Image 1 (spheres, rainbow, N blue to C red):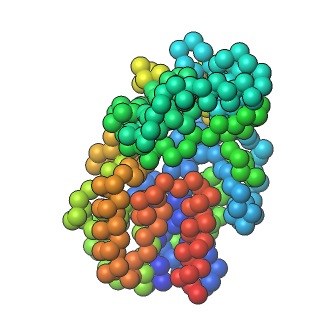
Image 2 (cartoon, one colour; image 1 turned 90 degrees about the vertical axis):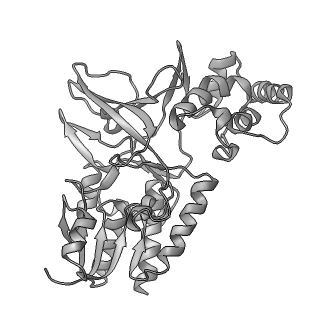
Amino acid sequence: MKKYDYLIVGAGLFGAVFAAEATKAGKSCLVIDRRDHIAGNIHVEEIEGIQVHKYGAHIFHTSDKEVWDYVCALGEFNSFINSPVAVYKDELYNLPFNMNTFSKMWGIKTPAEAKRIIADQIADLNIGEPKNLEEQALKLVGRDVYEKLVKGYTEKQWGRSCTELPSFIIRRLPLRFVYDNNYFTDRYQGIPVEGYDAMVQKLLAGSQVLLNTDYFEFIRGHEGIAEKTVFTGMIDEFFGFKLGTLQYRTVSFETEVLDTDNYQGSAVVNYTEREIPYTRIIEHKHFVFGKQPKTVISKEYPTEWKAGMEPYYPVNDERNGKLYEAYRELAKERPDVIFGGRLGMYKYFDMDKVIRAALDCVRAELR
């Protein structure tokens, strides 16, 4: 094979944006991915004529005008607004926590009433410096919102009791005293009409792409194939886990086709009871206002990550933070490798933040 300027490991958003910008600058890029598709976790698969978000719901939202213009140049976005609902036992609430939520919970109408109830609950708890996530959440939102909408969902997400989780995991829980169910506060929001894969395909148009290609196997036979490597996989795996293994949470999906045109009336429904094993159900057709005669739903089950599973969410506690910093020090010994993306940087990114990080990275590299 010929020699490239960049070997880019991972055909997700970070790698694809880096490849697109490097190609524009006249650089040659080889992009490899161990999966059989491009677009990483934003990959969309068509089932029954419905665009199914294979790795969980991905709703693009940003307040970064440059990033919004960047993605809009890759394809049209629809006007989808994320307005999820939460089910607790036989009760249904709007999310995020707003006046619709509080009105349903307490039978009140005004922001002043809601603020008074929450303030009274917080005062009655008399919590000083929070010792764990439960105390932190109670101090932020009071007992009712915590018990019904935070506790069970959070415990399923992390696989342990809220009293066993550190308080810093929840630094804030936004309370909105307006009747507004828009989950995001960002200026721009939507989903690409043609799907995320079409968007990533355009980013990769100037690069050679090899799928079903594991980096560690590939590089053994192609050492020196590129001047530099952009690695978007797990930073600890790159170094052979020599300092230890970083922790992740992962998600498994149970997807099924149902013989109905509308199963739950919303793209996202959260199930906040601990006793229900899944955290939410996604009904994919509602992301694009679908009218198909059937529907596709996915139940999401969070679990602890183990080798061979797909890592999703970094566990950003003190132990993992120190371990990641140790790997960053090791990375300084490899100036020929750029680590990027949520796995390479051990950080949870929304899609717009991935694009911003990739743009900043490639611009600094090409300066």
